[in-house]
Amino acid sequence: MNARRRSLPPEVTPRRVASSCLLAFLLIVPAIGRSQAAATRQETGKPEETAPLQTTPMPYDQIQALEGVISDSEYVVGPGDVFLIASFGVTELTYQSVVTPEGKLILPSFGNLDVAGKTLAEVKALVAQLNAEKYRLARLTISLLRLRPIRVHVLGEVQHPDTYLSTTVDRVSRLLQMAGGFTPWSDRSRIQIRHRDGTADTLDYLAYQLKADLGQNKFVRDGDIIYVPAIDLREAVVSLEGINEIAGYYRIRPGQTIWDFLRGFSQYLRSIHPQDIAVVRTMGGRVVRYRVDLFGTDGSADVLQADSPLLPGDTIILPVTQRYVYVSGAVQNPGNLPFFPGFRALDYVGMAGGSRESANLKAVKIYHRRTGKWAEGPGEAIERGDFILVPESPRRRWMDYLSITSGIASIVLAAKAIGVI
Image (tube, rainbow, N blue to C red; front, top):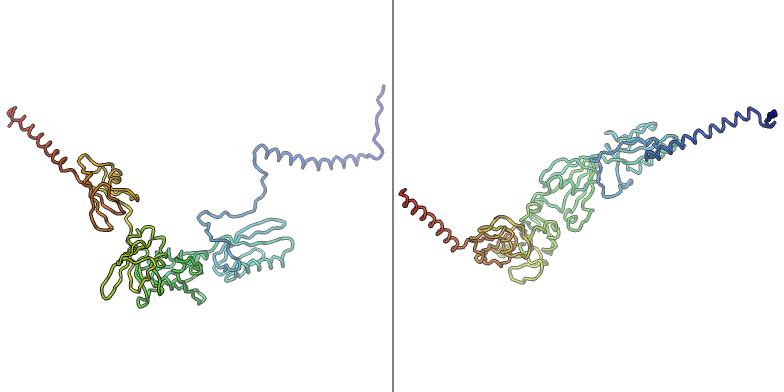
């Protein structure tokens, strides 16, 4: 039987069939591409790569430590500041721009902007205004990326007066540390900061040390001069001795107590034994040395309490505490040993490897550095810096001599017996 040929419906024409095929092709091909990309990502485990924003990574050694977020209303822009410029619109682009030595910020399509002396907020507002005037579809943002280096001069009573590189987020304390600290003649309560605009600030650096007053430890600016004056010895001052880092003259307030004064040096008191602190004072033409009792347990006449007021001309002595105990004599390993509170002489002999056979432990002698006196006995309490001497037993020494003499006599008798002598 002859198959009858089926005819297309009258509304389906060859042109419509071709258009439908073309539309299906345009829809199917992108879907196939996306499915292949998804399969590739699933095989490799990597996300689809897109064109990233072009930025320059910051080297690790240039990362700057900040105390907090910089206030754009307070930060003043200057030569050397690095900005990150980002453009968002039809195309996305980021790049860096450095403020030139002339104080200009170069922005493509905007030209050179005068930014030196302006706050960061003013620079952002200027860029936003120019962007709104020139572009409608694109948005331009500007951010401070890296702070500029500045030069600060540190002069006066410091160990190494010189010019130092710094940043505008560094405080005066950082520059003083770079200059090696103060000299003994420095007046830390009247430090001057002279600015390029002719203004000046006077800082009480001791208030920063005593009360953590950051207002007395300001941020530095470009070209600042930090000047540490010498103290006026005609005023009410005391001297501090014993620790080289803080030795010098200090102004005192009327009625200022010993403890109130020492609190300013709390970071150094860890190396000081409380019983070693002394005050030397001139009374009626003679020099008197007083011990200081910080705990209020000693009421002797030659003792000053922590709340005793200082007098002009006083000398406070903070002797550096010895952190070791020295063991010598008939021990296995003589030398310095670390100090442990509560240990006695016999304990340190054990730490020195124990005593030798010739040792006389009952006659152990101890020199107390603090009192300057000798004591005896293995149970004697040891203080920092003490010296322990383990003597040899006289009986053991005599037995050693007798043994040596007996050996020599035996050799002589044997030599005579064989006719050698």
